Length: 156
Image (cartoon, rainbow, N blue to C red; front, side):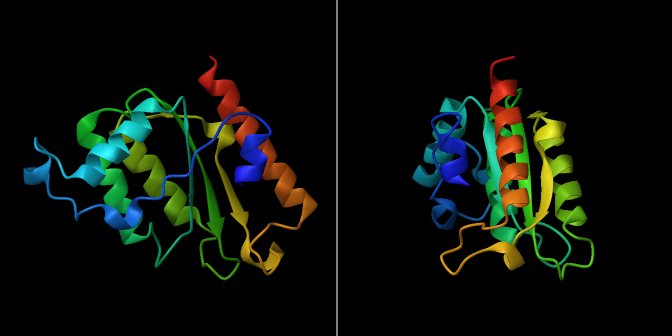
């Protein structure tokens, strides 16, 4: 997906998910954990946010929900264009619909500006090469379209 995003704009992957402490509203005050400060700085510096997540056990993976919880109190995501690509397994009973619904609920609560036509549920696993690269041209096109729509929304 980074290759697709790079065609349209500069992109950065957030790599600190495992460094975030478990969310506790009582801890959402200064001094914040350094990983939370870094997360909020990256979200704040971004023109838009593209989220890529699978569905796990009928919702968002717990560690990713934890990340989202840390974005609520700081306000950095408020009003920011956000979209997502739900990389669902074809075996998921809802095809990723539950994760899609969970993202919409949390991001709406946080005040993000959801770019609906840039959000997608895409059955990824069966269409990847051994290196994880998506090989299906239709799926690659759908991802490129979602990314381009998010980029357009950042300029609006």
